Length: 322
Image 1 (cartoon, rainbow, N blue to C red):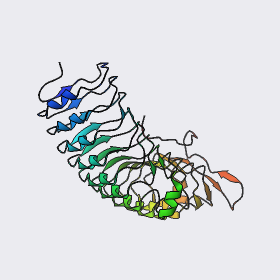
Image 2: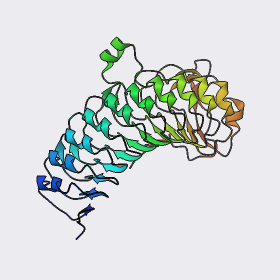
Image 3: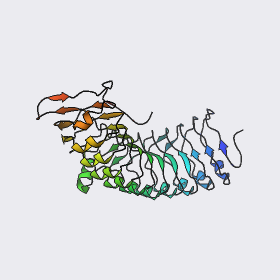
Image 4: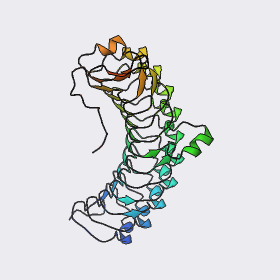
C-alpha cells in the first residue's frame, strides 16, 4: 500500500483533504515521506517535525497547501536530499529554522509558490548543499541574502529567477548594497545553472562573479533590470559553452574585449536589448558554431543588429524551469 514504518509513498493518488497530524507518529520512518502530486489542502502539520529519522526525502510538491511551512520542519536535520515544497500555495516567509537542515546535499525546492520577503540568512548554514537549491517563481524582494555565498560546495543549479529581487528599491538604496551580492562569487565550484533572470535588480553585475571560472553551461541574467557595464572579469569563464544570456537589461558601455576569450562557446550567447555601444570582440564574432545575438549602438547612433551567427534569430529567453 506504499506505507510502512520505513517509508511513506502516497504520491499521485488524487488524495484530498488535509494532512493528518497523526502521520507525525511515524517517527522511525527513515527513507522517504511523500504526499506529492495530490489535491491536499490546508497547512503542513507541525507534527511532521517529529519525523527526525528521515534521510531521503520529504515531498509534498504539487498540492494546494497554503500559508506557511511549519518551523518544526527544521528539526529534520538528517535529511540529505529531495525536500520538495514546490507547486503549492505557500504565501508566507520561509522559516529561518530551515537553515537547520544541515545534512542537505541535493534538491531543496521551493519554486512556484508565493513566498515573500527575503531568503533567510540562515540558509547560509546549509554548507553541504551541492546541487539544486531552487527559489524560482516566488515573490522574494529586496536583495539576495549574502549568506548564500557560504554554500561553497554548490556545483549546479542555483535558481533565483522569476522573483522580485531589487523591487524594494528604497531599502536597497539606503543600504548601498547591490541586489546580486558579491559573495556569490565565492561559489567557485559552480559549473552549471546559475539563474538570475526575470528580476528587478536595478544594480550591476558584480565583477566577483568572474571567479566562477568553472561555469560551462547556462548563466542567465535575462530581463533583470541590470545596470552599468558588463564586467570584463566574465571573460574568465573560459569553459562556458552554452547559455550566456544578458539580453533585455539596461547594460551600457562597450562589450569587454575579454569576452573574446570565450572560445568554447557553441551554444547561445545573447546581449540584445541593452544600451551597449561599439563592436563585438573579433574572436567572439568569429564563433560561427555559436548562436549569437547582439544589437549594439555604434557611436551612439542607430541600433545595429550584428547578426545571429547561425541561429534562429530569437532573443533567447532561456527561462530555466518549466
